[in-house]
Image (cartoon, rainbow, N blue to C red; front, side):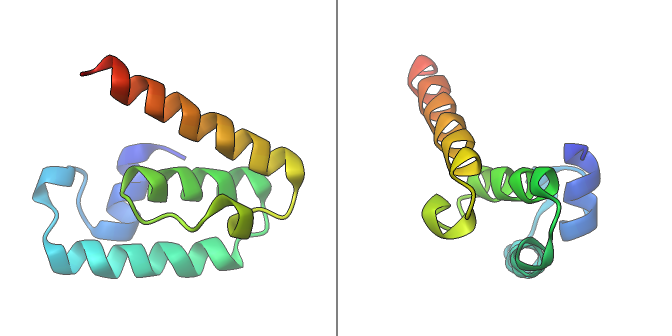
Length: 88
């Protein structure tokens, strides 16, 4: 999954700055539906990660049944927190 391709698929733009509030809401709803239907673990994780970046991800305990996926999600969240605190 390429970030720009996912932006275009879900939001119709390749630049986050070009997103309108309506396009963001519609794209996030589309992502939630796809996430719920996705059976490929890697694609589910990628969708969840993008939703995290956009502030709209479901709780990881609800999102992932597999303990290994939940651990990977926790690691991702910790990595994002470290990156955020390094930017301060």
